[in-house]
Length: 78
Image (cartoon, rainbow, N blue to C red):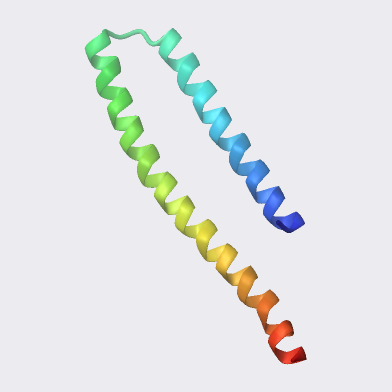
């Protein structure tokens, strides 16, 4: 994996970890009933799933672009 790829992976892990910690703290301090909290968690999970799908597609696109850039010089050298 390239240096850029490792940096992206580190940032992604940091963001994901921060989101989990933030969600946990929010649950502990939530001033609402269990039913309301579960409803909010379900909404948050759905939004997180959508965001993760978008982020995954962006990462895949970036990886594909980098791979295409690295393949060109090899093909041209042959």
